Amino acid sequence: MFAFVEVVWYKDDEVIKQSRYFRMTSDHECHTLRIYEAFSEDEGIYRCCIGKASTSAKLQVISKCDRM
Image (cartoon, helix red, strand yellow):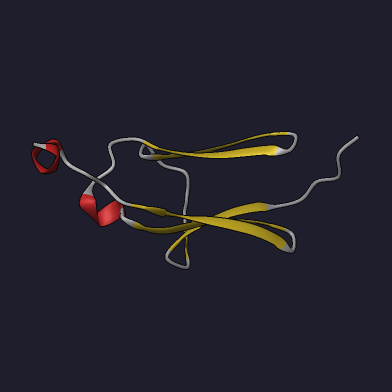
């Protein structure tokens, strides 16, 4: 049995709330943040905090025009 631990997601130290663009899911020990329709303003440092543990990643959005 797993104890309940709050999972909080941040973008650049601001809490992310679930919306049509951000979906958070948890399945036991796997916690996922999905970003739909990412734009340049979504770039930044994303962090997941669970109790005293945390992990982070930098998101860089590359548009189709930038790839050509």
